Image (cartoon, one colour):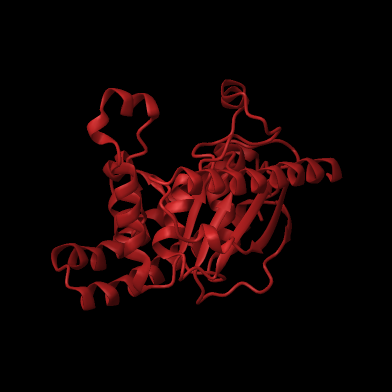
Length: 298
């Protein structure tokens, strides 16, 4: 713990450790990712994926190391009991800041299989990191807006197919698929623009969840529903690096997805789409009420 140092210096140290960790583990990833790219032979790919996952878990473990060194956060976490490292999980959470990703990885690393986040396809161009995300089989999505699709109808369905291909990759290795149902980080401006009916959440998007269930529904151990609350206010990533996040509250629960929603044509069946929307909206109402209660307790 570096509590005795000025916060800016703590942030600088944390940033340097984060950067060194990226260089170390991305360089190691490259050693095994290059043959995966050049020799896409299924048995070899499966063997390399296990090595790459091990590297990814060590990368996250080292992130947890510098977090323990530089942060003085009080963690209030419930729901970690009974998680299965060899299970299959579909994970959903509210999303407020980039800090959420580090919170989730820190708490879930080696308790469930390596988390795979849905990532915007254009981020594959990010130097080094784009290749690292590809090597770890993070699903890259187009995520075209409705306005874009109205102008470019030929692109309709690409989001769906990209998600299907991404989820199909997970069929051979225990996986945790992470989906921020809001699709973007919560801000007051976005909340007002949406006219969201929820107090602490943006409106959820059910399409990615429905497709993941459609492709891998028979493999998922359960749905892991996570709620993250920052009682002292939503932090920026730099505030987190500087050790200014005093408290983080996390609640997890495993819930069963109704059997009738495990398989269905979200794109082509209006009745199924409506049922999925209603179930996700009910989940989101419960989460909104939980956030309110946790804030009041704090």
